[in-house]
Image (cartoon, rainbow, N blue to C red; front, side):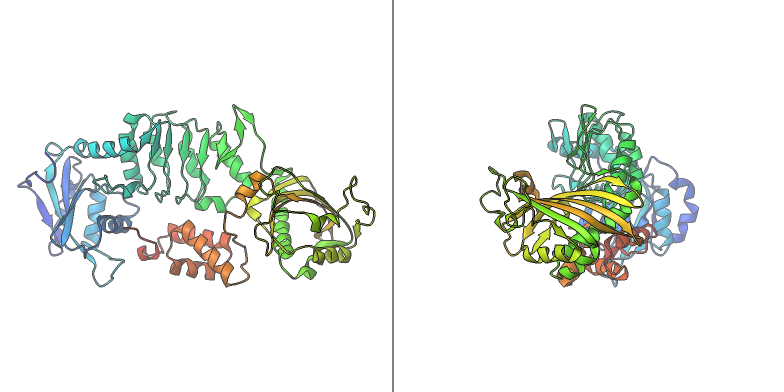
Length: 513
């Protein structure tokens, strides 16, 4: 027997807008976990199941509800749920009325039939079979793909995995399939506690890209597994941690991890090449600020400002090399750099190509092609750091403007001296080469988001990125960014505070049919 064929119990009590006060006489009944209650939505105004139920679930947060057998009936709809006494009390305290974010003039009105039937008449196993069928379809070679799960066309019920109780319900059903790898991308997941319903050591890889996880402490729930591969890209937390602490914290929660966000950390227990090296954690803020200031200034056409980064007696030299058999070999020539090169073996005027003094260095930069660096390609190694001296090696790619097909690689070796409480470049060696095939394949794939956008185009880029990360509408994303003067890190912190305190209305978030 299922919900559509079961007859209502003669003892059922229906609460509506008029007699909602009867809830005070039904408290004992609400605590019985074997009762199924029927929830009526009197009118849905033509909205889809997912939009209606998502609105109801947002209304009761942080309480949880598992709605089953959503059925449209006339202008309205109904569904069933049990073990939800606090949810029923919440709806009743709001006079069985829920704000409609799509039209504030037409709120959702509810009726609730308490004790409509019991678990003796309708067992949840009947509905687990549909979920299991969908999971079997999504399982391939021990990899269970739950990406965008609520949108699956074969799923009979609304199972929004951002709700911990619903995620736990789905994972509990999935246990029978014994997956080793689980993909949970694009599900708006904020908490990972529900993963604990899976058997210990049952999974070794987890893909959580493009969710709403804001803190690495959520990874404590993964400690029961032997996670060797983890993806977290696209979660707000990725913008709140520097790379050093990001990796360090993840290893603490997942000590056997070998691959993180596609990068190899170790293999068979042996540490792998680290993309960035920091000899001293205290160097992070100083070096980060230097890079954020130096490269945007270098890429700007106002190179005069670049002179302030160099000590007045600074030394600069450049080398250039063409690598053959690369994707870029045919298009990225280095002749414009070779004439200023100081390659000791093949440059006849190498002695004159040593530039001394900040003004002479900037004059050279004015002769070189205008360019734009890709900050996402940077590898930064801090080889030495003290209060008086820092040695930094930056490797990455840049693109000559307007020759958009000319992608070049670079290696810049900076020696910074601290004078008058500011670090200045005392010595720099720049090596330029045509980009390696591996660099070319990844170059300029991500939109550039600056800490302080300089024009409307850059502001729109940041707005689009911020809206994707937070799932806010563009109107609300713009409000937060403007309040934070387009400082992305600050805006993310403000968003988290607003979200935790429930100060963003439901219509402030994007909705999906």
